[in-house]
Image 1 (cartoon, rainbow, N blue to C red):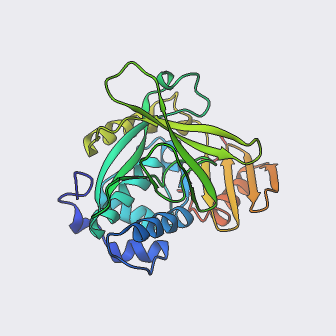
Image 2 (cartoon, rainbow, N blue to C red):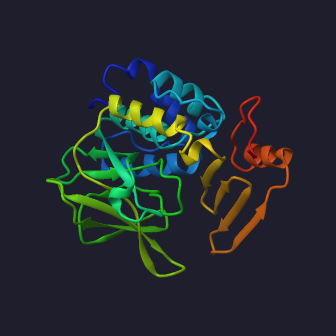
Image 3 (cartoon, rainbow, N blue to C red):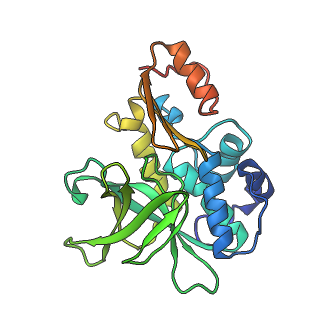
Amino acid sequence: MSDAAAATTDQFDLDAYLGRIGWEGSRRAAPATLRGVHLAHALSLPFENLDPLSGTAPSLAPADLMAKMVRGRRGGYCYEHNALLALALGALGFEVSGLAGRVLLGADTPESRPRTHMMLRVGVPGEPRPYLADVGFGAAGALLAPVPLALGPEFEGGGRRHRFTRLPHGGPLELWALQAHDSASGQWIGQYAFTLEPFTSADFEVFNWHVATNPRSPFTRRAYLQRTTAGRRLALDGARFTEVLADGTVNERTLVNEAEARRVVEEEFGVAVPEGLTLLV
């Protein structure tokens, strides 16, 4: 494997990770394994920002990721999720490198946002094209399955449709954009833009610290959680709790007090709230 897990495999327990996500399939470095592990991770580990909300930058060290997300009742945000997946895929024999993207959702232009999102470029032995893997994008248009890095066709995975486009920009490298299909409007919506040069663990340590501690970061200002299962998608944004069922039915309510918020996070998202943390800030 590449930088993502080199010299850290002694701190990562592949058996424990696969048990946590419920994957009992093949461990051969093949497309089916990549898709299966990616989907199992996405459906098992919630997205949450409770460490940044408490004023703490979460550790990306393998031992700490194992303690928090595999052995503990916690999730994480993009750096934690994709760092953990990178360790697993490296241990399974895939070639993994980190990519950094600019979030397009709500942005005026791709250049109006810094590169703050982490994704993975995954090479499969014997496959001519690499894949984009990403289990840490906390949005309705997030990938549930990895997609080949190829322009033109659309890809379906876990009931969601995605495609890539290229965006014009002034740089020397091609700028890719991941789009998700919105069934309600019938439109393709940009999720994030990225180039293909690799980023290292040192880069993501800086990004992680900035996003987790900058007072202007949305992750330091309100609770934000996502959880996807086979039958529904849950989201908590501040006090607004949303449930989207498989048939498209949307149930939404505002949480009225701290006790209700803690119960929802603990029971609906399966996340243990750190002691002393106030969710409704």
